[in-house]
Amino acid sequence: MMVTQPELYVTQLDLLLGRFEADLDTLGHRIRKEVIIPACKKHDLSFYSRSGDFYFAKGKATCGSVSDPFHDKLSDAALETVRPILKLLNMETSHGQYLGYKVASWTRRRARATP
Image 1 (tube, rainbow, N blue to C red):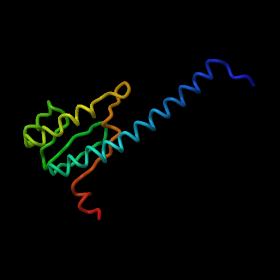
Image 2 (image 1 turned 30 degrees about the vertical axis):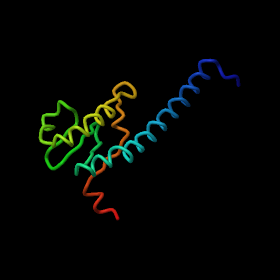
Image 3 (image 1 turned 90 degrees about the vertical axis):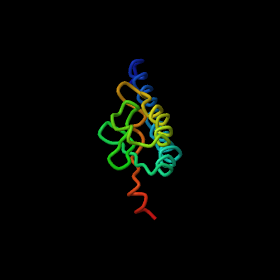
Image 4 (image 1 turned 45 degrees about the horizontal axis):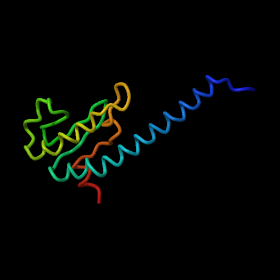
């Protein structure tokens, strides 16, 4: 059976999108390891990524964006660290999808429980 040109392009696009998603997953893992965890350890923060949202937290104070109403409860030093990280995480990777969705949560509590 002969493959038509449109079917060929559909197959090529599927392969490209699959690679793109895999690359984003890898990038999310690296960002968590190289950026999120060190920032959280430095400022005693946790990072949550779930249900289409991502944010830093310390106690009841959270910071998901610079316009977050709770961001003023974080220290100036912590805000200075998380603002550029949030700018990175808020980059749109496709329509309605953000890089921050690809970064797994990390909590201080989980870190203390892990040897």
